[in-house]
Structures are given as structure tokens and as C-alpha cells.
Image (cartoon, rainbow, N blue to C red; front, side):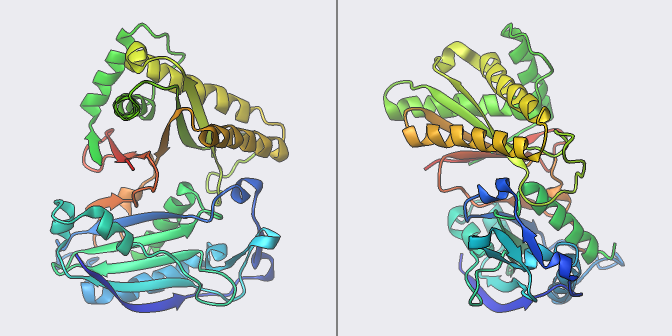
Length: 381
């Protein structure tokens, strides 16, 4: 499927920022981030009900997205700025975000039903930012792509230096309200209950009821470790790592709407055979790593202490990656982030995706059509 960019615009906040909002010093956790971008693509079908007074025809959607984006940026001024690396700050000096319009020469169904290679398509639905001025690339790029069937995709990329998935989700939800004027496997809830029963039958004494993210992490890890054994010819020690949102987990920060990066990497290591551990053993490993690491975070005495804890956890994780003598299983969870509810004026998305990572990793998110279920996106290199 061929996707061609038809127009490029720069969108600035609909109102200028006060002087105190024009410069933002990023946190130590932000400074740890690579120069990568967090991305999400929302797919909307061509189904429509023209009798619905809130329905927005395709011909007017581009203008609506632009106008709502400009209004939303007044609440997220740093996202319209540029990152100044030598000073570790984001500076807004009347800069803008990039807004692209594109057309695909195929239908949305062709993509959703696997008639095209998703790896070839996804990267063209959320364009990689590039310098548009002499300072630095935009921190945000939005791309609206229309399919021949009338369906569309809205791709968003935000710099990881200033945003984690919580920030992305908050931005999307606010943008949606402004618009309205106010390897993939689905694991269903019935299946989740069975996993809990299997985990309990192993005799593991859980300190608390395992979460669905912990259960699915353990289940997917079993499959990945078996694949790794076939590739390596033998079992190796393994490390299961999860990126965990820290909002609500420490009294040092009381605002749930805190933007920027506020997460940590949590890791559990084992030298045991996965067949010996079984599901209950892996659930216990993941749960113990979560409980131990997050208990330390909760006891941080101040912001500096918290930042040092996060840096130490990240350092331990990077050291294991550097040594390369363990099988690394990297997980990230978008569960509980309402990305499936981003109604830009023409209904909720039919499908939500992210780009496949250039390394072995697993992305978990809420299943759109099965309440309590989990989708697992597995990237294998």
C-alpha cells in the first residue's frame, strides 16, 4: 500500500504563552530518555450516521483537527516548543507542531485484515519528525491519512524527552474533547480468570492478587523463553523488565495529570528453567520485582532521592543489556490508558496501534472489544 504526503502545515497554540511558560527545565528522568518518539496511530472506519448531529463529514475533518489541535496546545505549550539539549530545557518561542495530510491508495480493511504488511504501512502513518527550522525538529508531529474507502488514520508522534504514555494519553483525550466541543494476540477476561486459577494451583503464595498485566506478562514470557531456547540451543538466565507508570505511587507528586516522563523500569532476573518455574513461578517473579521496586519508590524522601532510585533501576537494566549474557524480555503496558476512547468527532477508533519496536519487546494494551481483556503486541527481530 502506497501512502503519499499531500500537505504539510505548522500549527501553533491558538493563544500565546505567558513568559513563565516559555521555558521548561526537564527533569532528571526526562534527561535519561533517548531521542526517540512515543507514537500511537488511531484508525477510524468509514461507517457513519449522517443523522447524528455530532457527525463530522470527511471534508471537514482536517480543519476540525487543526483548530482543536491549536486550542489543545494552549494547555501543553512545551509540546509546541523545541528541545535545547545543551541546556536540558524545552523552549517555546512561537514555534509550532507539524501537521501532515496524506492519502493511501488502499482501503482500511486491507490493512486491518492483513492484506498488506503492517511493518511497511505503520511507519508511513506516523511520520518521523525532521528539522523544520534551524533549531531542532518539532516535538510533535500529527498525520491524518485518508484511505480510499473513506476510513482514516490519525498518527501522533511526541518526543520521549518530554512525554511518556501517560502524557500522550492525556494529550489525546484533551484533543478529542476539543474536537467534540467539550504479532498480535487478544487475551480475554474469561482467559484471565483461568490464568489466575492456574497460577494459584502452582502453590505460589502471592502477597496480593496478581494483576492481569502480571499474568499476561508471565504467559507471554513462557512463549518467548521457549523461542529463545530454540534460537540459543540452550537455556540462559533471563531478565523480565517492565516500564511502570509512577503516578499515584509516591506522595512526593500529588498531581495525576503530571506531564513529562514519570515512570521507572522494573526488572526481575532468574537462572531457573522456565519449565521448572511454570506460570505460577513467573507470576511470582514479576510480582516480587514490582512490589520490591515500587515499595522503594514509595519511600523516597524527596525528589532527588526518587530520581536517584529511578536512575539506579535504569542503570541496572542497561548494564544487563550491555553484558548480553541473559535473555532480555522487555514489556511496556498501555493498559488503563483510554486510547480506545479517543473520539475526535466521528466515533471511537476501530483499532489502535504503535510502531513495531526495532528490538524484541512486548506491548500490552486493553482489548478494545472484550472488557478486562489484554492485547499483546509482540515484536521479534
